[in-house]
Length: 305
Ligand SMILES: [Mg+2]
Image 1 (tube, helix red, strand yellow):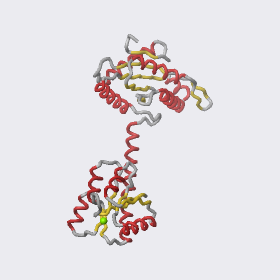
Image 2 (image 1 turned 90 degrees about the horizontal axis):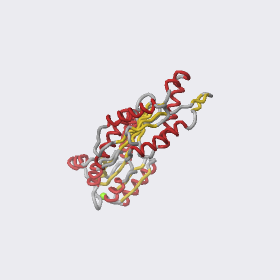
Image 3 (image 1 turned 60 degrees about the horizontal axis):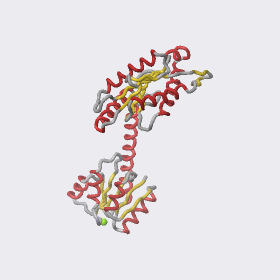
Image 4 (image 1 turned 30 degrees about the horizontal axis):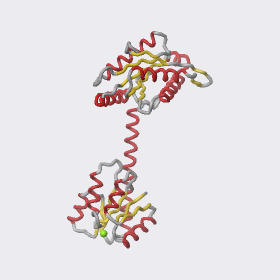
């Protein structure tokens, strides 16, 4: 684990550094408070810091205060190193946001066990963050395809409409529905159907722009959110999606399963249009028309396109 040592006294710093090195830490050293502040402001800051209280520039207390003001994701565990051991000094140190303190001259054994406690806390916090990220992923993603789930894609559409209203940009959506999907499930089983859905997701993602959003809206339904697109742009993208999906059959357990998608398009009609539901409904109506007029095609809600 990496650890920051900020100590202005060269002898004390050398002793600390060599001790920490022996205990397996990767030490980053600095001799003043501003240096410590700079290192702790970096994205890849060490998660453990031993800060001397008295240092030129800004003292260890102030370094700690600045660190805590900065609302950062990864917690940095701070041990203050101090010659002061009066009760009120210790309270001031902890109030500034330090997690622990060691009084100089320090005892190596004591420092070692305190560092072990610090490591436990840093490790725990890392695990908590990872668990939170994983929960967030599960709550927003469709487990089969890895695409946004219905709730998440509708939220993204809502956000996009807000942004577009502010900036005066249009937004288009495409509703896609795989053709005769029930037939694939009925003839070859749900595992085959799942493979077709996964492939559809991969092929659709492959033709989208980096800032487009693709979600699994329902069983075999997909919703694409296209920022900055009018009907005509969305129509082009819709055709590319249709082509990509129909390009070749999916191979599954020796079978070759051809599949296609029908798509309905709708774009915001006026600046400030915030009605996500109405937009999706219009795309859905266009999709219905694409189905009715033969499937494997793209239809647009606007009559003029
Ligand atoms: Mg000092």
